[in-house]
Amino acid sequence: MSKKKKNKSKSIRQTRIVTEICICTIAIVSAVYVFKVTYDHTEDVPASPFIEIASPESPSEPVFIDDPNKIIYESIEYPTAQKFEGTLILVNNNTEYFGFNEELESVTQKITEEGRTGFSGSDDEVRLRPVFFEALADMLERFSQEKHINDIVILDGYRTSEEQQELYDADLAQTGAETSERVAKPGFSEHQTGYACDLTTSTTWDYDGQGDYSWIDEHCWEYGIILRYPENKTDITQIQYEPWHYRYVGIPHAFYMSQNHITLEEYTELIRTNYAYESQHLEIQYDANNKCEVYFVKSDDSSQNTYIPVPSGKKYEISGNNSDGFIVTAYLEGDGQSPAPASAQPETSETATTGIEE
Image (cartoon, rainbow, N blue to C red):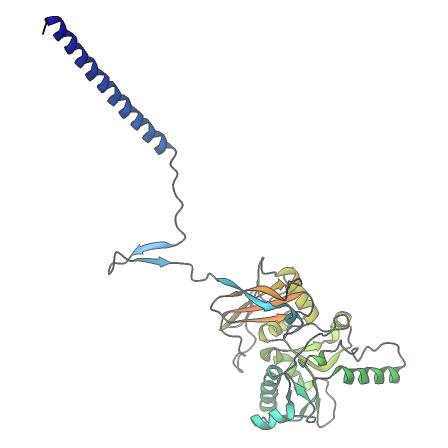
């Protein structure tokens, strides 16, 4: 091979080596640039709401710590028509009772079956809802034991629409008025719900709630019962003062109404207006062991069922308001039972019971 050809071959090899070095350099510089850009645009990832703590005994298994006070809600299907049923339904001169399937028990029969003492029923026709009878019986037995009085008589309980009509017509005939302020119109009486009753005494066949009998008004909230038509609320209830007429609503609600001196009209409107599920809930604590929250869920009137959020794993109660939705009582602590008989009314928390929150 000639010297000229050797020099040419050598030159080609040198050129190829230089080219390969340039390509490698460019590749390295590009890789460094891409890495730098990627790093500059990297953001910190927020911490998980759960905290992982390695356990000394089993370091490979993390321990998840969550907020122990968090309430988890799940939606359940509830019959929309049930908005006309429940212990908190409002029935008055403007709100008709559309209830159904009343489960009623004879007062005199239950007194005999359970061996109750200290009070009586006027006759076998007096009937009440079971939950109301048990609460009322417990209260009247305790009253008899503490005051040594046993003349209380449950005079009137559930009434049919026909019975209410007879009473209404009789009152109009007696007063000569066009409407009655003493007897509710048929369909608009609490007595048709089975959650209301009238008391009297076997000694005078009269009841004014005074003297020793004032104990009942002071303690009835402990059994979920309220004096339904107070003397200073006739402009709201549209019914004259009836010291003998009591209504079952449930302990937390009776406590709140008693503490704040409000009627069932005011209470149900308060929950409906201020305490929807989506906003804050009303917290009520009536003793050291029982705390609940109360909120409103509007009924889905376009469907047979309404989805109602309820607390998972906790006791809850649902009542219609007899109008446009449901009032849910979720027990955060306790199960809504009566406080111990010896307990006085608890100190109220500012957020729960010392005034209506607007």
